[in-house]
Amino acid sequence: MNQWKHLAAKANWRITQLPNGFYQTECSNPDNEEWHAVTRRETIEGAETAINGSIDHFSKKIEATQGPKVIKTFK
Image (cartoon, rainbow, N blue to C red):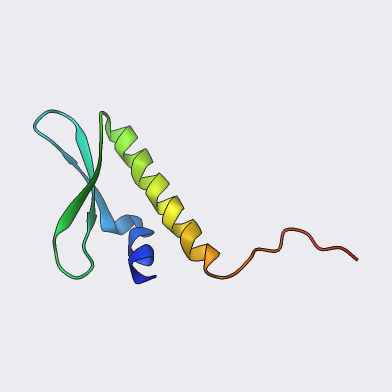
């Protein structure tokens, strides 16, 4: 759960440019100051979209641990 919370925070992500011109998304390790490569994209916009998708994914995983979400009730 702590890892999901870490990955759901945008402050724990960054984008770096590689020598070949591609952009790499990286996530920090909560236990030390190392960064880990996650994806590579051709554009900065694509890299940020990938990060936002990862944040959304982990946020939903955290939400799912709260139990089922009531969508509709009947009387």
